[in-house]
Image (cartoon, rainbow, N blue to C red; front, side):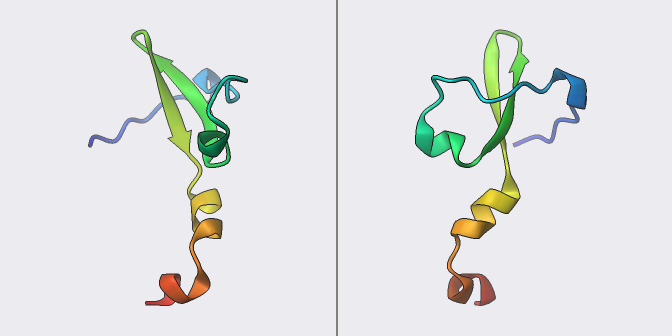
Length: 56
């Protein structure tokens, strides 16, 4: 994958129709050329990882 640097002012809140499982991990969305890019919230993802797995 590639890394994109996107301005904060183009980030939008999660759409109401975003899958609830995805919404728990998403920190917002960006609209790019007719596509929707979901921004992963790494802190939320790490909260789901059991502490024993994270220490391994």
